[in-house]
Image 1 (cartoon, rainbow, N blue to C red):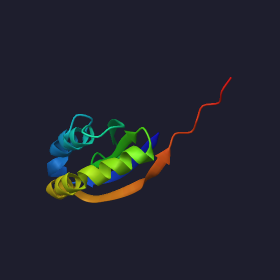
Image 2: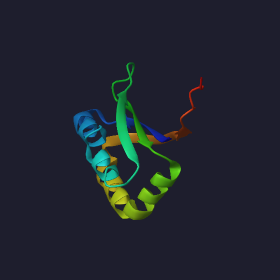
Image 3: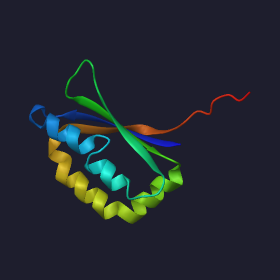
Image 4: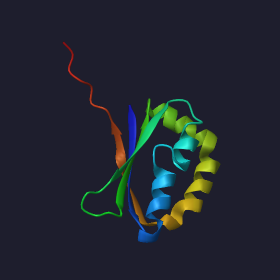
Length: 104
């Protein structure tokens, strides 16, 4: 599994719009669903800072994400530009792979 995690500090006045756009049924997830291998998005909110969020996007593998970026790069950039005003900052936390569970 290929997992991409982003951290956002959201402008107070845009928190509800951010949640709608970045949640599991939001604008980003709708775009990602158009690609094969997309497994889902989680939106996490900090319990200490109400305007800090993480997005966790899961893909079957890195190749699926790469193909998505090739096919939908223009739409991705357009949506990113459209929603950039919601946040004060955004930072890519990283790209991760699932650690296999030990077998029997």
